[in-house]
Structure formats: structure tokens, C-alpha cells
Length: 188
Figure 1 (cartoon, one colour):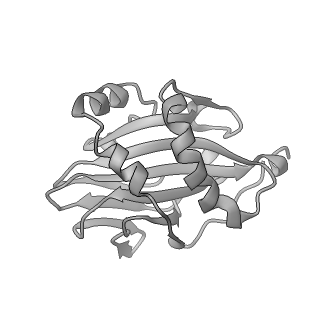
Figure 2: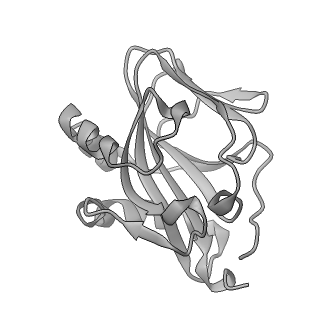
């Protein structure tokens, strides 16, 4: 597979209608967040205050062509795919694949420690964040670039350099996060 070109820090991909998905996210009970978070493969220490609902993930975080879907993906895919397809259309992929898809809830008053996502699949995919619930005190930092990511905007983030997040607000911050690549050009 070929390495993908990442933005230096953030690339703003524009605004999208996320209201139907955001409304659905607000109905997820804490118990489901806890159950799904307990199943995640990405249980790294930096996520000590973050809960995930993992729809799709890359086996061992190595080759994005080897991903799996969790049962909850079948419930959400028809809602998420039109949004994800609209966001990735400008990339011009011949055959777009989504190797990781998840919801990430950073709890109110908490943070994600500075870290680098490392090698493996992270070098081979574009990583997209879309805030579905946020507040002005939810910040994302890549290297020395700190921003509030706006509700409904999609951002490609450079996850192979140092990055962190903090949510100093009174409400949880929820992002839809997915990784994508062109499966037609990934055979090398």
C-alpha cells in the first residue's frame, strides 16, 4: 500500500448536515456507551476519559485492507455512509473503503493526552473527525495548532504527529471518526 498525504495539522473539508446523526447520538444511553466501550480494540491509556462505539476497525491496527465490522455497524451504516461518502467524494477515490468508523465521546471536563497514533494503518489512511456534539471549550491540538472544531464540519487531521484533545465544557464532546483509503490503489 502507498502512504497517504496528510495535512500539516488540520484540513477543513467543509460543513455537512449532521443533525439527523447528532439527534440519534443524543439518544444513546450511557449503558450502551459503556458496553460498546468495553469491547473496543483501541483501549490505549491516552483514552482514559474517552468512550468509543466501534463500528469498524483494522485488525491489529496494521493493514487497513484487513478490517472488520462489529454487529452495531449493521444498525448504523445506512445512516453514516451517505455522510461519509459526501465527505470523501472530493478525494476522488476509485473505490473508497472505510477501515475504521467510530463514535468517540470525550467526557466533560476531561482530556486525551498528547500522543502519536503511530505506524501501521495510520500511515495508509486519511483520518476524518466530524463533531456531532461539542461546546466552545472543546479543543483539539495538533503539534502547536489548537482549534475548536465546529459542529457539523469535517476535518482531516494529521494523526501521525503529536496531538491531543481537551473538553473543559460541561457537556460531553462526541465526534464521528473514520479512516478511509482508495482500495483500487492499495495493492502495491
